[in-house]
Length: 269
View 1: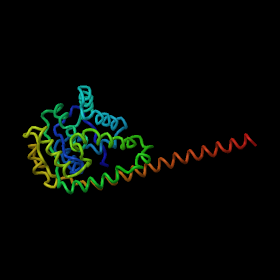
View 2 (view 1 turned 180 degrees about the vertical axis):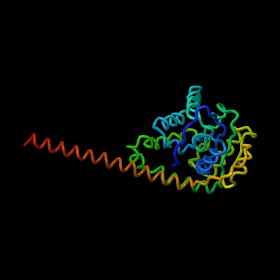
View 3 (view 1 turned 90 degrees about the horizontal axis):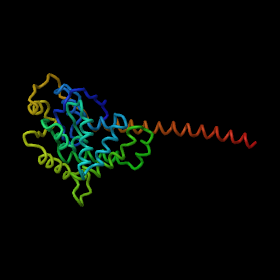
View 4 (view 1 turned 45 degrees about the horizontal axis):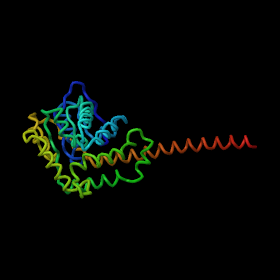
């Protein structure tokens, strides 16, 4: 999250489905895929919050259709999947990682690559993210911002939708735990053909990834992007932008109030 959103290239078809959970090196993985595939990569966190409001609303509508209850829900999701990923060579991070079956239905020949890390370290990283993204006053601060104002609702429907469906069985209130991590891995092994599924640790660099994609190792260093730092910088910027927007709104409101008060005083004088 925090980088510039890549733009789709007409005629490009999805070749890699990045099925790793957030905070598993997905930003570095995205940059690596862009180099190897020579095409735009849809990194969920970056795209969701750096695009027009209609984009995040489309994903909200998809989460709201999960768990899928009928053919209309399925068709709605498939329509959005087709439109959103048209022109991209790969996708990484949430929300694509939770819509692997739908992506495989649309792109049956795509390789599914799940980025992995130590489950305990993943939980700690997710804890840090949750502590910031679920602040009760966040929705108020973000309200003046066209796209990120929808972030609190996005998180809410994500958790109540497929995230809960896949990772939070009845009675388990945890949205991120080692059990959640393990359930994601088990789910992928269930829904993805064995010969299409690859698990990849970004710390291993080019070798395993190039082997999985059957491409040559490029003559450039493997990308190393600090996901946590990038997200913190992005979150802080959005908070500041929200506060600045509120300052302007309140400033205008105060000025208008002053004009109204002076006008009324003259009328009643």
